[in-house]
Image (cartoon, rainbow, N blue to C red; front, side, top):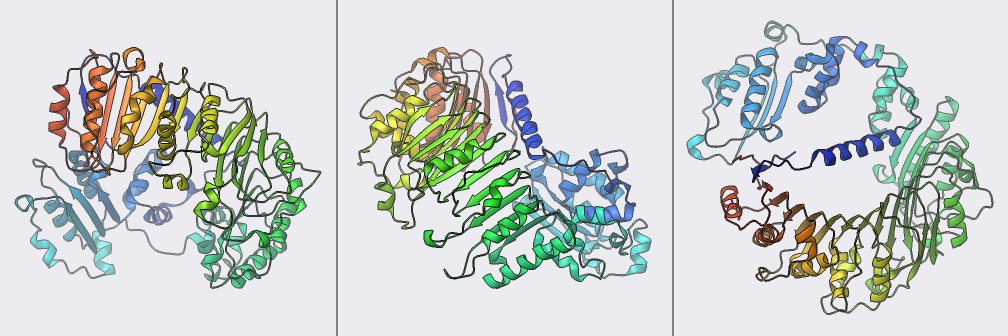
Length: 635
């Protein structure tokens, strides 16, 4: 996490506590949704002996191992038993914190592996020489020291003890130097099956299966893991993949093991390869699967595999993702526990079936649909009383040609979801007509567009501007809006004909803006009279924007705008400074301004000096400046 350069232009605090609390609440809610109906697990790991604990921590990055010290009093010093230290100074608040941590670690640990990545400033103290000398005298085996951006004058000298260090393995000397080094006996094999299954569940399926060759006892232990995550490209050929998965499903059935999670990524070598997806899905659906994710890559429409009817009646299913499959019609659908559903580039019998499928999920909360122009759905109807998050996208047909996208017909959307909170729209709004919708002001809208829209040139006049304008009118009551670069370009072309509808309730706006389109900002802000916060991400530095000091001042700058954040890509720093000046000199109630840049064109000190010299319209404002090194300088 980067640390800002802070400059306070008054005694008033920025109202960030509510934002932080809001983010934490959202993350906690998300974690709870991901863990629904997950059985409680006893903390068996903390009961293990110290030697085994050190073996487990050995495989974690140093930063993650240290984090375990806050779990309980017993865990407070367990990470010191690890004989490896991998540190980066950039992961600490400042260099002194990094040096202090290194000193304390070396005093208490027995270190055989030391890896350092160091970025120092001019007056930072020298400590690496002492560290290397300390570990070299204790029979160091692996040393990796890297300095970043250090001048010749500030290079640290390596101690003579490093040259004398033979770094040869000697059990007797190691025992004398490190009395607490844990023995490497096979303690893990003596653990109960339930604990081993927890460990194996943290590994990829491919790695978990490999443990079956360790010994007779380990031969079937991987079957205790209730999940399979497999990709056909990890196997020599498609037939090997099919054979392995068939045998695995048979073993699960023979051992009476529960398979709750099945994730498959499938790419056939040839169009006529055997069809297996249907009976795989049927097998797990009949055995009460909870999490099903099936993705078929680069499969032609005529070779799509059908979803079995048993899936529509799987009452245990909680999560479902289907990518490039054929959904057959059914008059009976019962998915009483399904909360998350992803339907991507599938083919449906007709649009009424898709509407029926969605409405047959009584507790569905998170819905994502990626459409195709050959999916048999001309009007997408989302009627759900429970959906809170809706994502809509589009991919072209099997032709994969640009003209196939540009000439696509206009598709309809009907949304009736009174509990909707998040709407992510990854499609061209000039190709989608909202026929009916209930989008409340509390819905957060993200307009992502699609990658094919970037091919529109500046001279093209959109043939469907009225459709796009109708779309913006339907979402004009929202309070939070995020706009991608391609949607901003479409808005730019629309505003050349007539202004956008008024977004009177809009409080938060985040937008990616190509530098060539920066001049549209005042006109866009005129459509947001009550805007409170704006985040601008400047992209594509293809040209240098003209002076913007003569821009008009929209109403929101005079009455409501309190927060501005400007993110600059490389070579966009000067434009970012001009924008910062524009907002500083015209925003009456501005409370916080954040400026970020990636290149080395600007220096922190000069940026602060230039910002201080501006004629600020607001009497009290906090300034945060993030340079490329992301190092704190407080004034």
